[in-house]
Image (cartoon, rainbow, N blue to C red):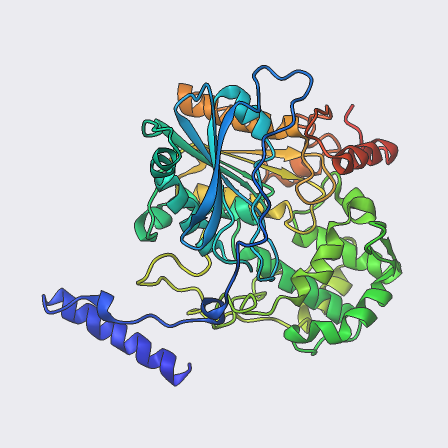
Length: 483
């Protein structure tokens, strides 16, 4: 342990003892900083906030809304309130935006649905990029708290929202799930009690995603002769590893991936690390394209998540590698693969707010409907399995519904699937009747050829992208359609 870190811990302990004896406050002890705290970001390049384009089938005038934008606490924001506001507010959390200095902001994918149903919505750019979920939670919560103040400043005083919900994609799914956790309610600087949540393609296993990335990377290195190469040296060997495992790999112009014989062995390992046998896994690597992001982005993230932390957080010591039908090769791999170790203090509780990587402990008391595509290999379906186990451990299973969607890449939902999940959460929160979901933990159920058919909706509306429609057509062509 570094001397400065040891001294900080000693000071914290001494201050806590002093406080217990009535002689001081732990808030006087400064917390350590990290590289992320010294980075600067800008809202200057965020485009203007414009009305939706009307579409056939609209039930209200989607242009007749109040649309407000600005900057709050270093984060840009957008707020939209329909003319027929129903008194309820939906917070939207966007996904990972990279490591550039320019902040970005996204409208919710179900924006049209929200407006037509009378919901107001608000979204933050967050004040920082990188994988900064702490900033995402705090800035989203701060914006929710400022909703009425913003409305007054724009000449439309509104009553306090009767309900506040939260939804988000990918990293935004992590923000969404973390926002309703008891630990967040206990430790956040901006506290918001959400009435329900819909994480989509979310990192609902928090740090476990990065552990899986580490395990996948170490397996790739072990199979290709780089067993002892340091984990943070991936860039120097990525080309060699990739060419040994794949004869064709996703690029800027193609999502196609063709494995070598060794690559097929590797993909078997990946399948078992990321949720086990399941429909859409083969389509996911064959043409979904998300595994290219795992190799090209996730494997290059260092063990501190590129300065989100000061100490290594990735731990692969708990993984057992499995090559189906080859116990001898599985045993050999487990005996030789490099194991990564996390520092137990890397993501400790802090005295100045949330952990640097807020945890999804599975301890919540509001309705949560979580959806995930089966072919996602950037934020794999195993996140849902981790979430389910944690919720069961903490007695929250009764508040969690999970749905598997037969998509083949990261977050490639149809709008109908997302609207249905949101509406299911709302009906649950309103009536108390729990909606249907999928069993994500029973291996034979997940491996069934029809798994994920129940909540997959291959119908398209005006807000479905050409990319999603093409991928769903690809599933049909590959023989992956539901009966």
